[in-house]
Amino acid sequence: MARYILRRILITIPTILCVTILVFSLLYITPGDPAEMILGSSATEEELASYREFLGVDRPYLVQLGDYLYRLFIKFDLGDSWLYASRITDEIKNRLPITFAISMYSILIAVATGIPMGVYAAVKQNGAFDKFVLVTTSVLHAVPNYVFAMIFIMVFSLQLNWFPAYGIGSLKHYVLPCMCIFISNFGSMARSMRTSMLEVIRSDYVMAARAQGFSRNVVYFLHALPNAMIPIVTQLGGRFAGALGGTLILETIFSIPGMGLYVQGAISKRDVPVILGNVVFMSIWFCLIMLLVDILYAALDPRIKAQYIAQSAGKRRKRS
Image (cartoon, rainbow, N blue to C red; front, side):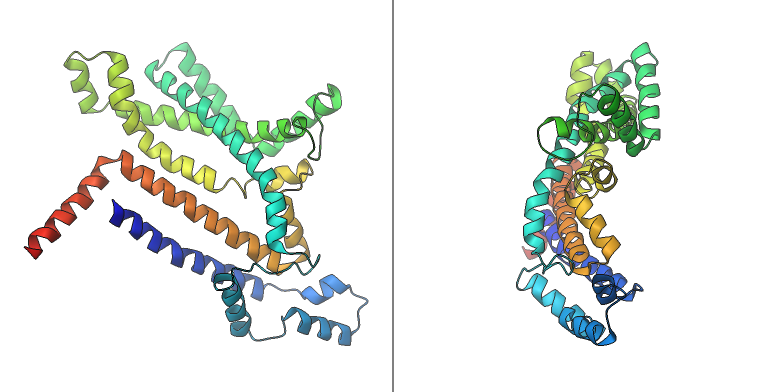
């Protein structure tokens, strides 16, 4: 198991490095002059040249790339924003808790409700509850969350005046964006859990356990459910990993000063250090979450354990 974890960690390091180089290269070849975008079209050529030198964008590609990689991975410095002259690390520290709270709470509630509903729908296949789950999840999964955001604003903010339509202040400000993220995750989570559970219920070993006289609850929840959770763990990892970057549209609609709105403003103004800093931070977050998913996956799937135990036993036999 330790070798499996070490192998995943060693894969994570070059992944982050490759993502950083790729995004830096794409931003480098993207048309547009950051000096002109910041100073405006009224700036003289001398002012533009001086500001390009100040930003460091007049240097060759390899020099800029090497300098950025050195500051990032040696000094652990994400740099400063070109547009606002503020520390990117400080901005992430201020904005991350908002995005984290909205995303994580919504996904956790979706998991806590979607998985049990999917399991129960699979156990009661073709029943009234199963049909209700299929219809409901199909609708929720098909409609984008920004459509629900506009509907919620019109109904709960403008008509009923129950919740604020924009900004972040009290707990009421979190309700509508959390509802949007919850809906988009709940539908796919319940449907995926139902599908996975149905596949396991129909497997031979579950049929054999039922034939041996075990009760339905024992067979379904002690034998079938752990195996049905294996593909769901991968899906959960992807949702948690993409949570920080998945709120961009919602943060724009609700005017939430989180990570998504920060990145969107940087993209529109071509604030390269902010874009790079956020992409690197989110890629590290994604890799760490997927590393945890791999560890949990190995703990749930006995085949991975058996594979590494067999490899270790084979190496010991060769040494002896």
